[in-house]
Each structure stands twice: as structure tokens, then as C-alpha cells.
Length: 460
Ligand code: GDP
Ligand code: ZN
Image 1 (cartoon, rainbow, N blue to C red):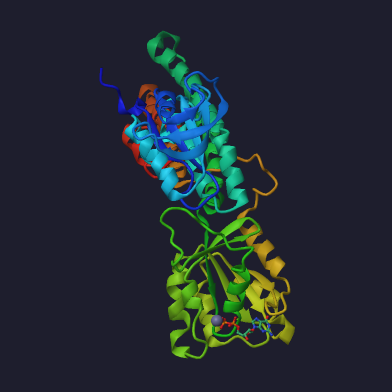
Image 2: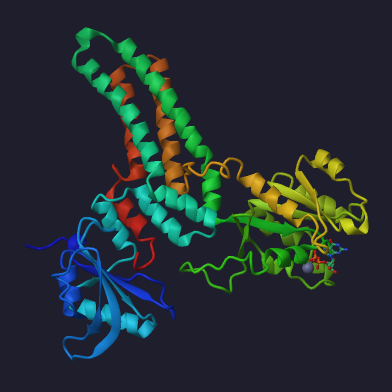
């Protein structure tokens, strides 16, 4: 019998490679314990109780060479992350040793895991749904504690529970429709139609609520693209220096992000900001021709948030006005800097003229920088702060499917209002139910699932 690749035994290094104190090599699948036992010298791992940690050595059975002193955790199905037998070998870190252990496991019957394959198995084996799988990825990539908290909440099944409830609401009415179609003599079309309409409204409203969280969810996940703009000498570099000081800078070790990119991430009260075009800000102060609106345009276009700096000790210049006009359509905060030099500009007046949030600072004297940070946070996390149990839609895929389901429900409403027969309206209604199922993976096509898991890091 040819075994499905889905269920062969896989192995991978599950900790970031490097000179860490401890690395973990994870093995999962039917033969996990047997394979690990072949390279382990200590207790007989096939005889130990489940969920025990066992001291011993990794020894190459072919040469007898001792590779490392390790602790091997044996966890038998089904109470494991993948729901399969799992062995985790805690070794001493270091690329060479960790890799040697992995190679030894591969030589003794395990297959190298694909990126995300452990998580995929957790999904395929029914331990988690797609929203939870995605949150595993989010936890790995979380840029701030807040982002991590939201992802952990998701892993506990927050969104899953909500989506299931919505599907159930639709299903209850669908059952009614079936009765109606099968037993037309009851002639309850109208009653059933009313029920369907009620359901469309109720579910639609809940979808709207979830969609409202999508923007905040995305920001938490990806960072808020922020551009610092202003004419020369207003204090851009000073603000940048303040924001990137070490306790705010976020060190990302996500695969693909290199240290030499122009982007820098900082955490402002839990809001991850991605500072864009920071190289453009580090200009030479006296080469005037390099600066100005033109230069900022690209950054402004890409940004979710503009921090527009003005020198409050001077009257507005043409360049200030150009920047004000050019950023008018964007979410922005106008920072009146250099208040320590006396104010020529009125915050209240500029706020009224621009309709934007205005704040006064002295970056040099570190005055009101906390106020600026609070404003950034307030602007983007209206509801989140106080409701730690709030469910957030954190990615494009989820948001896209919610919007699609919403549209299908709107089509149901239009159909009902124009007197379409129930069995026709039912098509979109069932469609909405299926679309919601795609969010959790209950009705997701295989290629989508493969695509999704391939985005994971190796060893997760
Ligand atoms: P940029 O050209 O916009 O990047 O401005 P910089 O950050 O390089 O600042 C230009 C000059 O203004 C520097 O000498 C800063 O120290 C100074 N500066 C920045 N912020 C303030 C402030 O709040 N008050 C005063 N008095 N000077 C400031
Ligand atoms: Zn500068």
C-alpha cells in the first residue's frame, strides 16, 4: 500500500538557525518515535510514557559517533500539535550540530518537512482551522506584543467561533427552505422568505462588524506604512532618530526581510510603524535641490499615515503649503515642531483649515513626543485597546471572503425583493454559507490550502 505523503513522517529544525542556546528538531508522523529512537541513546523511546522528556545522546547508528547531548520529548497522538506522534529533540544549538541531527533523522526514515507542513497537518488532522493556522503564521511574524496577543487570541479560535455561528444562522434558514421546496403544499414561501431576509440582515451586520476590524487587523499584522515629510530643517531626522532609538526599534527576523532595506519598523505604543523611505529623509541638509515635494511624493503615495512636520516658529512657506495640499487626501498628523522657539503658527487654526489632527512638539527638548505617540495610537486603534477579547480580521484573504459573502447576501436580498422564487434565491444564500466556510477551511479548495501553507517558514 502506498502511503499518502500527507501522513509519512516528517522532520525539520523548528527554531531559527543560528548560535542560539537551544535548538529544536521536530519529528512528526506515524514512525516519529521509532525513527528518533534509532538515533537516540538513553531510554528506549518506544517504551517511555507519552509527554515525557528524556535525557540521552544522539548517536549515528552507522558510525557510532556521538553528535550531541539532548533532551527528547516524546508526545504521542492525539494530544500533539499535529495530532500525530511527535518527538522534539532539544539539542545544544549551533548550525552544524542541529543540522547533523536533522540529517541523521532523514537518513533513518524521516522526510524533510515542507514549509508550514507541521501546521498543515494540524489543519488536515482537524486540530485547527484555517484562521488558526494563519494565526500561527501571525504569531511567528508578530511585530509587537499587541500583534502577538491578537494572534494568540485567534489561535484560541476567536474568529472560528464567530464564523461558525454565522454559518449556523444561514444553515437554520436553509433547512426551512428545503422543507418549503420539498413540500410546496405547505405554501410557506412568504414566511420562509421573511426568515431568509431576517437572516440576511442579521448575518450581514455581523460581517460588517468583522470587516470594520480588518483595517486595524492588517496594521497590527503588517505594520502601518508611515512617511515623515516636511521641508528641510523642520526636524524630520530628529523625529526619525527619536522613533528609531533602540527601545522602539523592532528587530524582525522574518525570512525575506534583510537589514539593508530602507524600511525600518518601530513600535509606537504597540502600533507597528513601518517607516518608509527613511533613506530619503537622511538627506544632506544643504543640497536644496534634492529636497521638496517631488522627493516626498513616492513615499506619500505608499503611506497609510503621513507625519507632516512644520516649523511652528516660522510662517508657512510655499513648500509647506505644497506639502499640505499634496497630503490632503491622506490620513495624516500635522506636527508643529520647535515650539521651544516660540509659536508663529496656531494649532487650532491649522486644525480648522486642514481638518487634520494637529499636535505641537519640541523634538529637540523632547516635549510632547508622548502626546504624538498617543495620537498615532488613538488614530488607528479606536476600539482595540480596551477590548482584549475582540476578534480581529487580520488578513486580506479573510477580509476578501467576508466581503464576498456580504455581496452574496446582498444579492439574496435583491432577489427576494424582486420576487424571485426561493429555489433561485437559495443559490446565493448557499453560496454565502460556502464562502464563509472557505474562511475557516471547512469548504476551502485544496490548492488554496497548499498555497496558504507554503507561505510558512520551514519547521512550523
Ligand atoms: P530635517 O532637515 O527636517 O531632517 O531636520 P533635522 O531633524 O535635521 O533638524 C534640523 C535642525 O533643527 C537641527 O539642528 C535640530 O537639532 C533642530 N531641531 C529639531 N527639532 C527641534 C525643535 O523642536 N526645537 C529646536 N529648537 N530645534 C529643533
Ligand atoms: Zn534631516
